[in-house]
Length: 117
Image 1: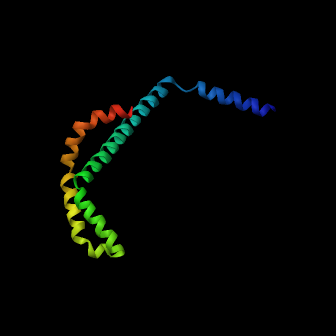
Image 2: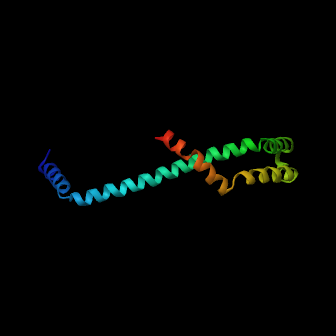
Image 3: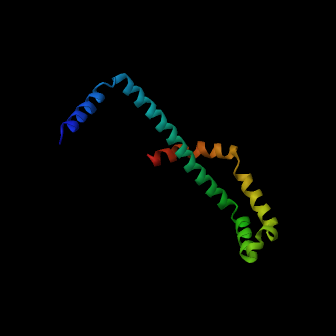
């Protein structure tokens, strides 16, 4: 180890000593705010996926009809399964509204938040 390495270490340690504690506490507060926002986005994402899964279960008959049509027709699914696709989308759109999601979030939100901690 030459003198340059020891000088660098001294300079490096001195620079950390000069950081004011006020600045660090502001940084910590900012970090906490970012983490709480990300957590709520994560909780919303988990709730949304569970909500969509329940909608698929509710629309199982139309989803199955579209899937069967798609298996039968192969690449012609776009043209030959239009009615099944419309029926499936209509069913899913009745369940997947923002109003229904907000109601679902109120019912299940606290349960999901506690489970993800």
